Structure formats: C-alpha cells, structure tokens
View 1: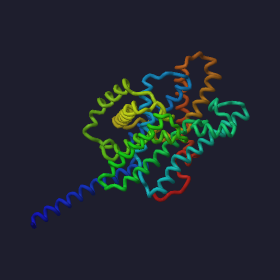
View 2 (view 1 turned 180 degrees about the vertical axis):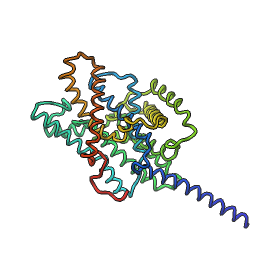
View 3 (view 1 turned 180 degrees about the horizontal axis):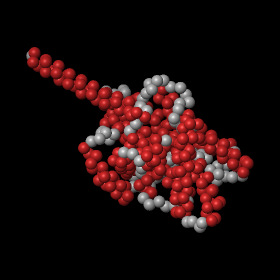
View 4 (view 1 turned 60 degrees about the horizontal axis):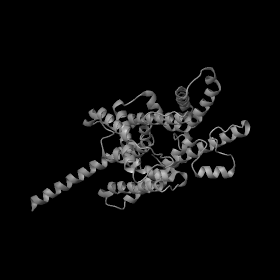
Length: 384
C-alpha cells in the first residue's frame, strides 16, 4: 500500500509538471502575441508584407481590368492569411471590457476615421471640382449615404476589412468565453466546434443570399480562418524551428499546385459565391494558401522592404485606395498621353508608384497619425 501511495504521488506530481509545462508554453505564446519589438516573430511580418502586396496588386488590377494569372490562388491567400495572422495573436487581455477597448483602438476607431476622412475628401472633390473620385455610384445625399453604407459601399471601400476583423474578434472572443463553461481539457475542442458552427452560419447567409449589414455575415464566414491561426500558433511548432522545416519547399510547391488546379471563385467581402457544396473546398484552399505563404516566409525569414510593409500593413491598407486612384488620374492625364501604353503596362506602372508612395507615407503616418493607424491608443487601457 505504501509503495502504491508513493507511486500515485509520483504520478500526480508528473501530471502536474506536465500541466504546468503546457500552461507555461501557452503563457509564453500569449506573451509573444502581446509583446512589442523585442519578441516580434520576424517571418510573420514578412507574411503580412506578402499579403498586403497581393491586396494592392489585386485592387490595381481591377482598376485596369487586367486578368491576373492564378487569381484564384491569390484569393485563397489574401484575406484568409490576414484572419489567420490575427488569430495567431488573439489574447483575452483583462476581460471583455479591456478586450473591446483594445479592439476599438486598433480596428474600429481607425475604420471610423478613414471612413469619414474618405467621405469628406470625396465630398470636397465633388463640391469644389465636380469630381466623382472614389466611386461613380456614391451620390452625396443622405439617403444614398445611408443605403450605401448599409451595403458596405464606402468611398474608400478597402477599409471594410478593419470593420470585419473587429466583428471577427468579438465573435471569437464570445466563443472563447463560452468554452469556459466546459472542462479545461475540453476547452480547445469546444472553441473549435463553436468556430465551425459560426462559420456554417456565415456560409448559410451566403448560400441563401442573406445580406447582413456592416460585413457581419463576412465575419461569421471568416471565423474558421481566425481559429486556424489561433490553434496553429498555440498547439503546433509553426512559430518555432523544427525538424519538418527542411520539407518546407516541397510543402509549398504541393500546396500551390493544388490551389492552381482546384481553388474556387468566391468573394469573402460580399460573402457571395459560398455554398454548402463548395464550402469545404473554400476552407481547405484557404488553409493551404495560408500555410504556403507562412511556410515560405518562415524559410526566408526576412526581406527588409516586404517585412517593412508587413510591419505597417494597416497603413498601406487604409491609404492605397486613395493613392492608386490619384496615380491613375496622373497617368491618364500626363504619361499615357506621351507614351502609348496598354492596360498591363499601365497596371505595372500604377502598382510601382502606388507601393512607392505608400512606403514613403509610412514614416509620416507613424509620426503624425499613430492613433488612427493602430500605433497608439485613443482610449486609455490598462497595463499591457
């Protein structure tokens, strides 16, 4: 009996040590997720840099009606990757109120500022210069503003992602909170199941053509991508060096080949083209697209310019729509009159100028606009 008791105590001690080790690992991951420059994971910045570059490429290509090769591959990477990376750094902070205030500072208030700035800028150009700059359908009267805003048609429409990501964070936080009702061992499983259910709700909206204002329907559909990042960062060795890293080139090639042949067409912003029949393929391609860029970034580690774009990707996100339209006006009114250019050449030229200008704007925004570019808080929060 005495030996049996000692064995039981040793077993209990071993289990406690294992649980403590797992807890320490999760705490460590949370510290990395909320820390500053000292603990930044450099290849995550590189992945964000690739992502924002793909976003700008797509939007400029639409302006010139250029059909990009493998556009479906990029669709399976751009937005899923952003949600994935946000999920990697999810943290509950000091509770619901603290969490909401932080997301207001980082997402919703920047969205509101850039929405109003773009609207007033469009109003200024329309009234004083009779220029329909941002959109041809955005009529400047109260009825049109209300209707278009409800439908997600903004003067600078590209800031929609900040609003959508705000909802995704709140929805996922709610699922995380509900999982606390379960036993601790079952909580990760509960979060995963709730995320799947939430995703199905979003897919149902798309399947039946139900449009929910303010991109809430898109947020529901996007939660599984966010959850994928949450799980990958905490329960895998994705962010660390491991013996599987030597196979990264093979994995990336296989993933991209798979996407090239089967990636479906759909629109996550409008939450359209997603049905019960193709949803499994959409999520699978999204997961593989995310992994292809993250693994490639892990292998490369850092590219100074691209990593710089990723570090301040929100600044490029909110400004590139304004910039590339100005550039298009400049090109059409001057350069294209001197040199005859086709749509592809115009696209490349605009892309070059847009990324150059956005890059030069980053130091300006860091110094003079930190509160509306997620660099500093507008609403005071507790100690980090």
